Amino acid sequence: MRDPLQAPRWVHWMLIGLAMLVVAFLLVMPLAMVLGAAFREGVGVWFAALVEPDAVAALKLTLMTAAIVIPLNAFFGMATAWAVTRFEFRGKQALLALIDLPFAVSPVVAGLCLVLLFGREGWFAELLARYDVQVLFAPPAIVLATLFITFPFVARELIPLMEQQGAEEELAARSLGAGAWHTFRRVTLPNIKWALLYGVLLCGARAMGEFGAVSVVSGHIRGLTNTLPLHIEILYNEFHATAAFAVASLLAALALVTLVVRFWLEARHGDALARAHRRH
Amino acid sequence: MSAIATDLRRRMRHPLPGFGLSLGLGMAWLGLIVLLPLAALVVRSAGLGSAGWLHVLHDPRVRAALALSFGASSVAAVIASIAGALVAWVIVRYRFPGRRLMDALVDLPFALPTAVAGIALTAIYAQNGWVGRVFEPFGMKIAYAAPGIVIALIFVGIPFAVRTLQPVLETLGRDQEEAAMSLGASRITTFRRVVLPELAPALLTSFSLAFARALGEYGSVIFIAGNLPFKTEIAPLLIIIRLEEYDYDGAVAIAALLLATSFICLLAINTLIPRLFARKRRDA
Image (cartoon, rainbow over all chains, first blue to last red; front, side, top):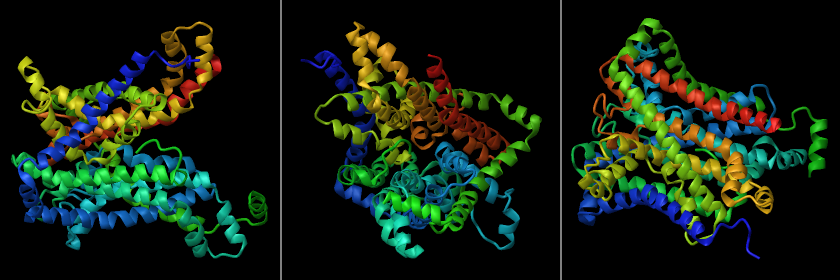
């Protein structure tokens, strides 16, 4: 007998066709555009745009920012996840909501907040002036803005998974006499390693791609405070479209790696990631 | 294993180490990186006073930008929710070649840097672009006009819609649908009376998520928007412009409005929507 809930064949295929159109126009086409436009004038031009000094400086700053942001947010994300999933305390729900906060705040607003702290009229203006430290329109502000934006990624991946796994294995290790560090390294870390890896990857991809918040605080000084996304903006606005797309293709490749790793992790280690993947 | 655990829990007061340390570290980091900057904005906007607020809100350029941002974000969130529901439905209910690829591609807007998406969408919908070219002879402008802004905002919103609706559709019992249809309800009636009410909270959540994201979005919109004052200038851009003019009060007021709106969206998602539907279900 036919499944009674199955719509007639033509409805079925019409819906699939419509969904494919949505995905093709909205998602596939931009990706194709980036790659197509990046190589429009040949591999030589593409490569030249990447090794040009301003692009190299932007790449360096972007990588340096990611190298600072990822370990910090991974470390503190793990600490938060441990506190939230292994202990009961008052205000836990509020803390969970606060962790998600940066997802809801506009990147431009996040950047503005940093200006209010470190700008000319900012809370720390006098302090910074006394010690002659430049934060705004310099790499420190770029790092701070990126830390804000990527704050939730690692914790968000770890919390649902560690909640699901429970504390039983760690309790068993402790009861057998394992020390705190030993328990963490031999029991907790192996259990969360794939989710941690995925969280780090998401954090890194976002750190290297962040535009709005960094744009507000960077000052756009070429060769000094330009990250890759800001470099793309400058190239595009100066009508160097091919060069802009060449640099964009680097970041698009990073995005594709993120998607492929997620695809692979879910296929191979599905139970090592949290079930409820909802928001990012 | 679980017997050991309960026994341990009973015997030891703090069976696992590091509560104070991990909570302290987490809270300190949260406070330093997230809460302190936001506090600066809240304090500064509270200091504006009613005169300051009125001054900013009377500015027709600010009103135009806010109207555009709220309007375009609402339209985009509605379209993203409907299109997202379609994609989620097809992925959950049907089996077809390319289904898993489609599922993976949905996350692209999460992963693709906004500036990259921005220039790509602009190139596609500009007058000489792949799609813009088709509409150009009819005098329809997509890029550098409101439709372009809406398209960019749909792009950023659609993964929120799919990923919110997908788990709900997966757990949606087919029993009720089967019961309705065996009692003679048509396919359309079944969808309207059985499936849609079950989906309603998820649809509202997906709208709120997509709307909140769209309202604050900057990178993917800024290239396609055109950025003409009073016409195609979005609120986040006006914040940056005010900042560049050293008009801190103007920037703070717009930013505070956007921040308050995101709080309301968060509140709606976490509290209002679940509560609203919990009551309805109880009454029914």
